[in-house]
Length: 427
Figure 1 (cartoon, rainbow, N blue to C red):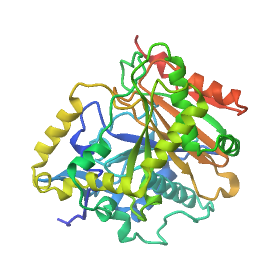
Figure 2: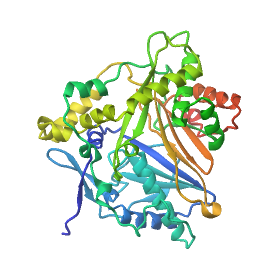
Figure 3: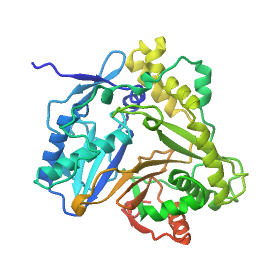
Figure 4: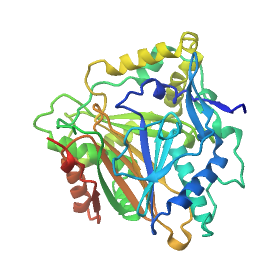
């Protein structure tokens, strides 16, 4: 039998296989809307060609004695029509054990990814390559600038564990203090009874949104985070007197610590606003801007990076059997307690590929949700369109309505779309 190639999971990825359940998986979606209907046969060719450039994505999850690892997958991946259930959990057997799922519907391509494989930055690069070869397989030209193709073979750094690369010795207590988070306000609302997430997407002009951000002296990430927390705080100002409004904001560490990794290299900043603070958008922007600035300092991040690497560096954890690690991880996540966050707000930034011939309309990014994080935001910009996607387990849509209304009141033209998930639930 042919010997397969295997890959180590990075230190951030190792936790995700340990906490998989029949109802919970750490997955997210990156998608693209084309200006034409998607042909499934050419999409399949595009995916198979892209995997030749990403052999470390052509893998399946395996259980070792002390840790999980990624082993070469010898099957072809499945490409199917999307059935409309946002971030439905993976049926790994049906998916031929791949850690991603590629589907399509009308003019849209959806790439769902398991976080044990990569983060949003890595997944976006992979999708760009798939779309490049999708068009190329039809003899349609598309510039390859800023796209990883077979013309530039994989580098060793693309599979490195960047957390280990930047690890420094630390005191465990110091790491716990940096990583710990206090209780947070969670929107009190009924959640869906059935599987599947609600989705409301807001599309605005990137240039107009950036203009608005400059007027407020902040980045797009800070502005959207502050506005999202502000509309929630404004709504619950009479009932919430003690719990902070907390936004978990993923930080792409590649922009601070040089790395070509296409695995995971992201950490959360935890930005908090007290309910006792002055209730104004300007004040929320000021607080989150300062908080995010402090938490993106190299010294602070090095401590968090090093703490994340303890699974490899701490002797007891390194040689603890994987089934014990998994048991402890699940117990830790199932312990009762207050929510640690109000919402996750993740910005993939601007997609840097040429749109020759106007083949691509926009990209979008959908975060997963859980019982303790039932409303999250993903955003991405392309072709002067920023798509802000609210995914939720909540039946209500008040936060999204208030957010969109606020943008419109500030002069932005907002296009709104929904999957109307709330109309399908048995209440």
